[in-house]
Length: 78
Image 1 (cartoon, rainbow, N blue to C red):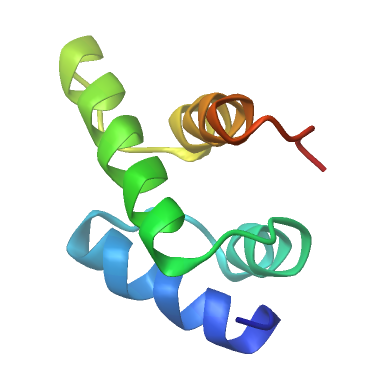
Image 2: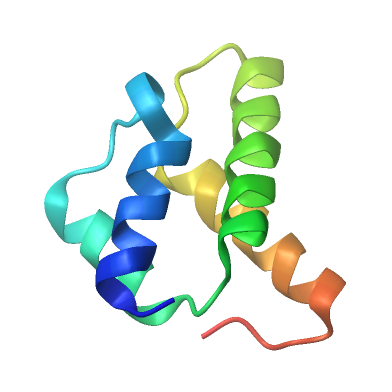
């Protein structure tokens, strides 16, 4: 998917847990070339991290989960 489709995927997977501002969401969509299933994996992992820390899902958890997903794929995070 392209950036527009990826933005929609991020929004769909984040749902009501979305605390990202528009600029952060646009950066994710533009820079992270993941497919929908990988975006879902990132959001689920980030939500687990946030839950374990007792805080809302935020950009820090998403970045950490993104790094882990890229490592799983054998790719370097952009």
